[in-house]
Length: 159
Ligand code: 4NP
Image (cartoon, rainbow, N blue to C red; front, side, top):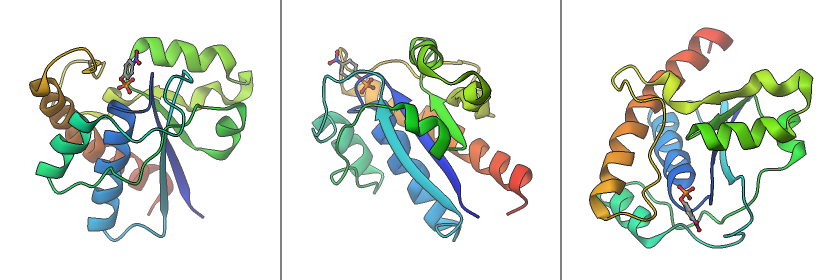
């Protein structure tokens, strides 16, 4: 079986594509590509079919993570059936997901930072309106939470 992970933010051009790229790289490094699928989406429709924000692409490229192939899409009702984890970057994203979640699948919606062993913050801050330093901090947080998430998957699914 494959475990499927969907990262979700507001626009799907900054935080969630970054999380997709970081987690995919980690999964590949750990030789787990055949066991885990990774995708990302936004709660809003602002940036459908757009590539990630250039600042996110650049910050990730410095860490040898490629985001250029990712295109924006909006989270859909079907995602709740298809994915095992729907991981919101902040409380607003989580609320927006829960607003459309089928009741019996709402337990799949979690805050991504709940998996972070190293950060106390529960939200990945939106870097869109700030400077480039915000994108590096987002990467630091996401890299940490990604390691915790992989541990959770390994434990839960015995892979
Ligand atoms: P993201 O950042 O949710 O991390 O992709 C944002 C991207 C776009 C907007 C807001 C946040 N926007 O208002 O267009």
